Length: 132
Image (tube, rainbow, N blue to C red; front, top):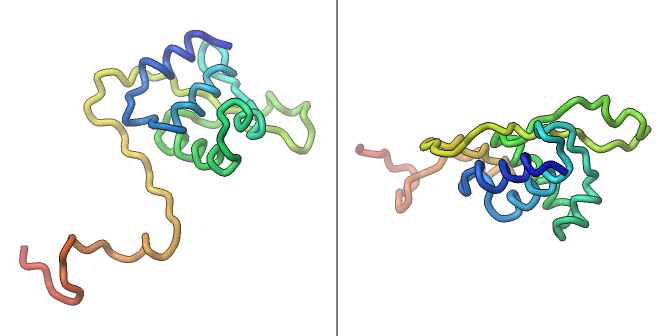
């Protein structure tokens, strides 16, 4: 447990970057990291027990945290001794995000054909050309 990593997750990460379940998952990872924010490797089952979320929520949360740049995959050799089914090692980025006016936007997860279709402005008529 690292108080430095927990303080970073609680106070240095803007609320826009880690809302709701993401903050709770980030705090659980920070609790398992060392003082530099490295080497956190709780299993998904352990994260489920700590946060009370489903395994799928944990998987999506880890993906979103990685996409936003708050966590990155660490040195996987730390879990070699676990055998075939070993957890992923995560490092916290531990950057100072306070005062950052432009937070990096979260990458949108693609969930089907609706995301491939071009977006039309609200109230637009299909087939009509935009006059602006």
